[in-house]
Length: 354
Ligand SMILES: NC(=O)c1ccc[n+]([C@@H]2O[C@H](COP(=O)([O-])OP(=O)(O)OC[C@H]3O[C@@H](n4cnc5c(N)ncnc54)[C@H](O)[C@@H]3O)[C@@H](O)[C@H]2O)c1
Image 1 (cartoon, helix red, strand yellow):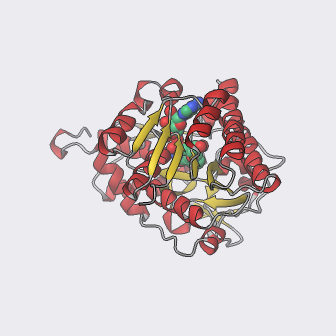
Image 2 (cartoon, helix red, strand yellow; image 1 turned 60 degrees about the vertical axis):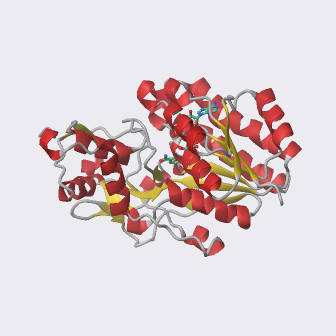
Image 3 (spheres, helix red, strand yellow; image 1 turned 30 degrees about the vertical axis):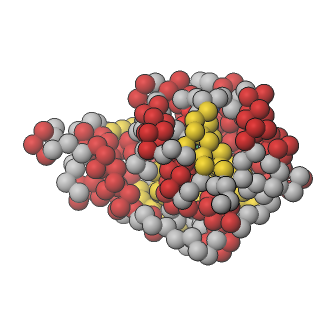
């Protein structure tokens, strides 16, 4: 019998990494997960990913955990040399653009240097193995805000009628946040290893990714946090743009499935815009409305100061991803995504405040 294929997933305790680990284990892969619970160091106890890792270990005998730090170059090399994985999914990161300014060394060391450590190890020990990197739309910085917008009743949209932001958008001469810059460094290194060393590296510039395992924190992942506030009666603060700023949402399950499509048909150094697309886009005010439709009245205040570098209207143009991976379909529409998060935090109506 052929041996199961082996995947190495960094950030396996996080939202995207754990989804990938679960899906691959279910599909018969052996999975080695790298995660040192640095999320707890970034965001405090509420951000810890230990329970998720424990769950993976309990439910999947084909999951093995390696609590190493991707900044530890030698530990990364040793693991790659021993395991020689068939597939690498790199999701470990300092993921918050707000947080990065207060921890610039750690942000760059994890996001940029950690990625280089993985790329060099992959080049040296499993050169032919497809490598998916979760980049971010923050590499475009605030450049999408240069586009002319029109204001609709509760949201902004592009004045020129475009579908969304595609991969041709410049990453230069704009404000990224330190996070956007450290991820851009990693994004470029992934492209370079793909092209220079002819390695099958895919760069996926994700917008808002959401999933049931998201540990909601105010500084990272607005949708999980706003839903958590709504269902637990906590007050939410809207920062800037009248609450009409738009995001498209993709479920982590659909991201994981796209990575498997890349594994089956990889390209060297290819960049993809990745998000929920237009059908999965919502403004904050529309999110408030949707939550009210689901029975959860929001209590929110408004702070006119927008978050630095925040996009006003961001919708991913998925044309390229869809054309390269025609079998890929999103299973999660926006309502299904929100309902899933609601279920996670829901308390019986009788005990709800407000
Ligand atoms: N969630 C989103 O909305 C979103 C949007 C755009 C891009 N992304 C990108 O997708 C990737 C995954 O995001 P996520 O939401 O799953 O993040 P997450 O914070 O849920 O998971 C990241 C994981 O990486 C681990 N980690 C951090 N530093 C580490 C280190 N030095 N060594 C080993 N493990 C480490 C953390 O403990 C955490 O479990 C990130 O690269 C992020 O930049 C996410």
